[in-house]
Image: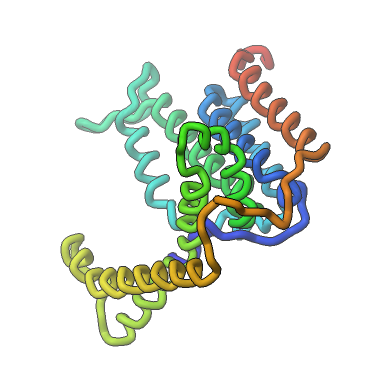
Length: 273
């Protein structure tokens, strides 16, 4: 299960998203998140789902890889769906038994939630971490926040911190999997028993994980000091970012996508009858 988590991983490629300016991808990622929450009708949700599938296809990242990353969040998706099914009230009652009431509106809202969470995770992953290297993501985020330097905010340090944290997520996941495998080989039972027993069984995993994380952080700090790292002061870049025609086309495509979501929200379903 831990190996299925692909958050923070970069998949090299030569797609439109890979070649796009990281600044444009960060902005368009925010636009995509806003558009996901603007969807409010069956047509707009269908359009959102179709657009997300199209984004994955254009990025040339295997669908299996993207969908496999959802397995780690399947419990959260199911839990959210169940909560919405049993707690959403409406006018069309489908099932009733004692204190359990299931309405058609609850099922619809639960389906919308599943589509929203799935599209949000897959779309932002394709826009950012899957198709953008950590270095490019740092440069793009720093340049977008550069106006804040005028009020003495440590923009470079903030961007570097965010990127390092994102970059080390796969490393820590891999380290956790190794520690758990080592503990199981020594006879540790990490999967049986109640919640409290499972929590106690994770203590032998968490302690070496924290030790390993602090050791990696110290090694990284020493390596940065040995390379005379002094933050963003006087820093130069080998590759300068350029906003080209492909980025403009991608921006227009996302503008059309957001406009489509808004327009489809206003289309009544009986227009097709």
